[in-house]
Amino acid sequence: MAYRVTILTLFPEMFPGPLGVSITGRALNEGKWALDVVNIRDSATDRHRTVDDTPYGGGAGMVMKADIVAAAIRKAKEANPKARVAFMAPAGRPFKQADAERLSREEGLILLCGHYEGIDQRVLDALVDEELSIGDYVLTGGEVPAMVITDAVVRQLGGVLGNAETLHEESFDDGLLEYPHYTRPEVWEGQRVPDVLLSGHHGNIAKWRLEQARARTAERRPDLLEKKK
Ligand code: 4H7
Image (cartoon, rainbow, N blue to C red; front, side, top):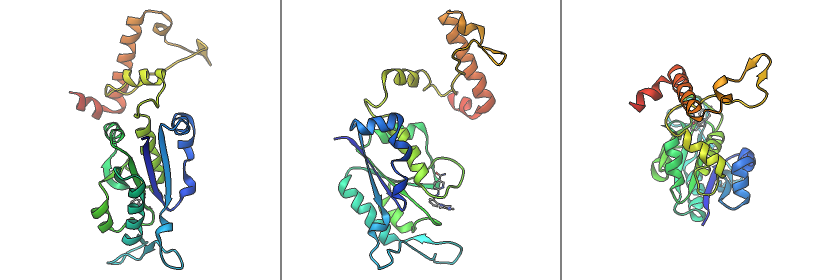
């Protein structure tokens, strides 16, 4: 059975969006993974299809209702019964490459996208396995984070990446930032390609790339070097 991703959202028209093109789109068309998009509003029961209500304790904004969101999650679980359920939130645990690898080894994924001020905590406690954040910024909704996580997970699935793409992955899965890349022409607007890359000396090229990756990491992400020790 193909890996199934179920998205629970108030804005289903946002999908597949970027997931429908390039590597993820090709893999989707080839049946290497499946995407279900479920409108949370379809689980509303009243005449106005209400999904939100005012917060207990007061304050600005609205909160997504526990009963409606719970019904949507339960419906998603019927079609994707062994899936891990994740909620995209600014207060979530930071999503890392290791999470993409771990989630790709699960039997499917249900991603819950919040809007308004968030979702009633009780449905999260009862039905959500983990809460994830893609970074320290606030977004309008959880849809873009869900796309980010789906992209990162799908490219870890077997048979999704081509040979060249897989090789590249391996050479830079070492906790360093990537080295800089160059292609023709040799001189562009007065800037030359570094001589070593034209030398044909594969040992020197590998050494230079590693030095570049280390220097960049020290400059831009010293936290990553600290972790490697
Ligand atoms: C849960 C709770 C994820 C989800 C609140 C989601 C950033 C990330 C959301 C909110 C997200 C991330 C709703 C609070 C919109 C702010 C204006 C959806 N933002 N939002 N409010 N970093 N937003 O992964």
